[in-house]
Image 1 (cartoon, rainbow, N blue to C red):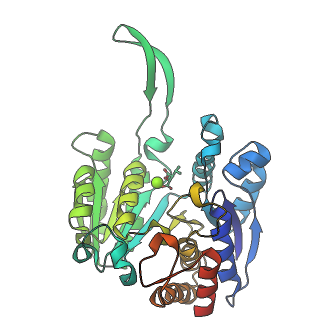
Image 2: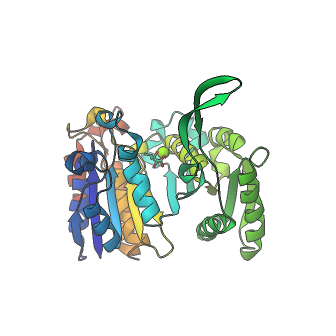
Length: 354
Ligand code: IPM
Ligand code: MG
């Protein structure tokens, strides 16, 4: 079980340290090697996804990532931005299937900005296509053009999908729905965009392979609205890269705590990159107060999907539920009557629960 560990930027190293401690406490043998990705890699080598990291990531069975990015790299040319490192590793490793669960832990019901009855028991899974769409479309750029008789800057990106790209992510979503409540909602914008008309056509064509799953379709603007109106109508949602980016942030905040949510990005053979859904939180970096639970839960997803260690994955998830029940809270999920702890103390609590 070879893991490439990429702590990244901001709070990344702090939260990763806790996830690594949790993994090391298990009765399993891992080989872990650490490397740079994102801003720290730019500082060390000038590249957000340097050669050495590429070699380690390609040789590993799984990649565990903290977070990348920060204001100090915001003025770099686009190709050197930390985010490019993340997009680069996703593309290079063929990690087309991004699984983003949004689960409301009962102990955190008050953390949501929505009424408790709207979100109580919430458990949805967003399946986001991760290596196509407008994110990777050519041509793209900003250039000077003559438009409407005026020389002006012109920005352009290209949205595109092949039917095989759509079919393979739909199959991942159908399979996931099959293991859950057997409801799949495919999200598109077919009333305006041809690319997503194709998305809907392929979804309809794929459905007969999964007669036990109920497929529905929703336009993305309506889906965004329905997610706050009545999120519990959803079981699994599947959508393209860009809509999935937006809807998964929205869904995460239904739970009140993006600091709790893990994610998995998988290739066709269960190799995966696992990372918290949240970012590098530069404002609290280095203070020892960030919530490590999303990274710890990402490690659990890694055990489940890449290493088929379901038992160990569930042990970690039970330990996280237990520390919440015991009242431990980092600042992002703190409320009166609970016990505020820092990153390391939260890691200690999870280890003790394990
Ligand atoms: C995400 C992030 C990334 C994305 C950025 C950092 C490139 O927002 O993982 O959702 O847009 O995919
Ligand atoms: Mg995002």
